[in-house]
Amino acid sequence: MSAAHRAERRRPRLDERGAVTAEFAVALPALIVVLALGVGALGSVATAVRLQHSATEAARLLGRGDGGGLAVVDGVGGSASVERVDGLVCITASAPIASALPLAPVTARACALDGGR
Image (cartoon, rainbow, N blue to C red; front, side):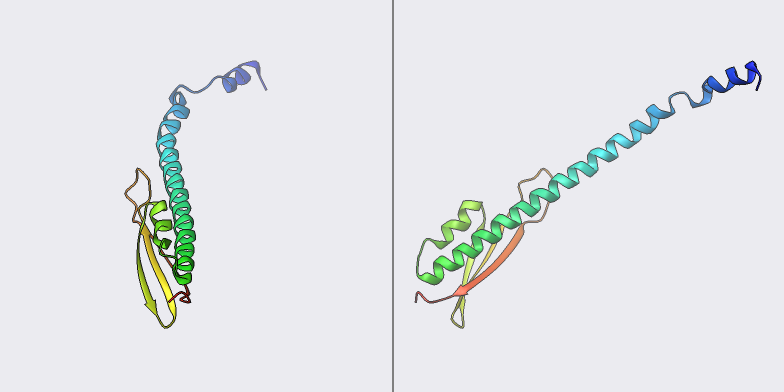
């Protein structure tokens, strides 16, 4: 290999200058969108878990005859409705997701034996 050929090989081509910058400028907004969607999904799952736990606790409390069961759902920032059917007390709770993205509220349902009547 001649010295001229090696020197030509080491020099970057002028038409490829800035290619990495352009690729980075395209990839960075896509990465930010993916991260925002991931954070929104994690927030949605966390809200759903908290809401399911509070709905279960509220159903158990109402099943025992404790009237403060719905306050547990209010503590999560949600609303709930009570339904008593066939010896069960069922709670259907929903809560909005605290996010900058416009996401639908999550819903949870829990039932317990209605022994407190």
